[in-house]
Length: 136
Image 1: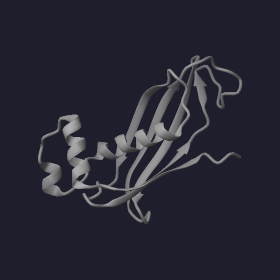
Image 2 (image 1 turned 135 degrees about the vertical axis):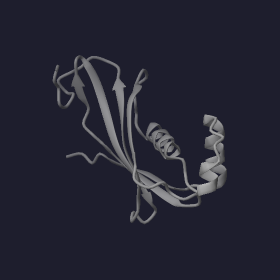
Image 3 (image 1 turned 60 degrees about the horizontal axis):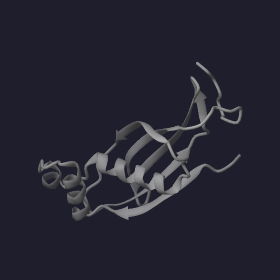
């Protein structure tokens, strides 16, 4: 079986990166600074960006679904790492989907911060090669 794991790397969450994210999304609430925690969707945005860099998605692919479970928001200053697992492509109702599950944890993988699942709608016809073919 083909290895479908993707190491998305390790990075530090800095106060500057949190401020940059909050400015980009127009969030001016002081709660993250006051509590010293990372906005949960900042992790999600980072992971989706890293996945887009690593996956060879065809032109016309559409990000169709995002599930996020924040287990514990990491403190600002934390070094985190992320990994992802690509599920086999599947078809339903004449559409093709690709789903990737991911986790974000501390750099030692001892503290889980976030789990998520992102699904992309793929262009093109459904073929017998799409794993899990079903039409309903």
